[in-house]
Length: 328
Ligand code: TRP
Image (cartoon, rainbow, N blue to C red; front, side, top):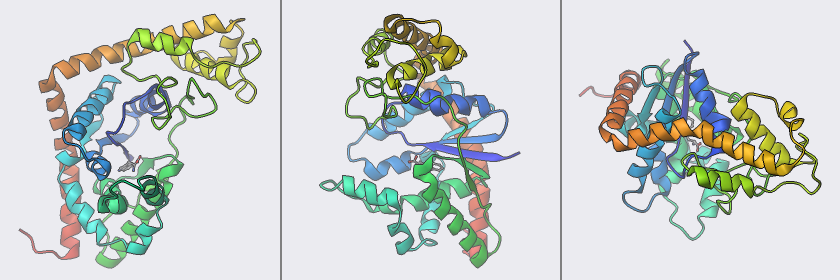
């Protein structure tokens, strides 16, 4: 079966755009392919400078992944640092990639420029080597990523091909695939921009764990368009179209069909808010249960780590053997 790896960093809270755009498809797709989902806390360390933050964020993100419906008996959900093979193969990857190649990574250039007055760790620079290890450890066939990660998948392929050439066939060469398109959720205050945790303010972001009253209020205050016609037209009416697309994602109707049922913005905003509250209600309930039963959550993660380790340890052994390292 095709092996698929998706990873997400435990930085920032999960919002409706993440859920409708990606996580919901992860859940829907978990039976079709052999899916691995990593919470990549080692990657988050590249920009972490306060104690206690990463662990809590990792726990919360893991709880969200199970709460939205990833089934621990089907999907392999694990925390990167629980599978020590990532760090070991990460180092080996650092020795297979050149300084020049890493210097050309646009994400490093962007992130280090943004941290102008902040500490720029060496980890931020070697980050793609660790990402290559994440991918190659699982004999991954497909990595669903957006455009911002294409270059990291390309370098992973280059490293795998180079390693296989130097040391003999060791790694599956992965390919980047476009994630199945979910709903395109825009910022409620700036409907021309994607809902994103890097937005200037929280007012246009709906978090998965927002209180129902807060969700309703955020939708009531959503920016709409200057005339008062309810019509699905992303170009001319970005605000209303965003509401229609979100409502459509909740109800399963098409945005156009929904548009014909409204003649005013007010009821559309109210209904969309309510629909989102109902969509998130079971997720929030399950999340609450998991966070109050840490034992269960930890057990689920141990199970994921064991499944991941079984694959990762075999691959790492193969790499060390082919490198000709001295067995311990
Ligand atoms: N770099 C990715 C991001 O910022 C996260 C990531 C780490 C990842 N390891 C990965 C993505 C492996 C896909 C596969 O989104």
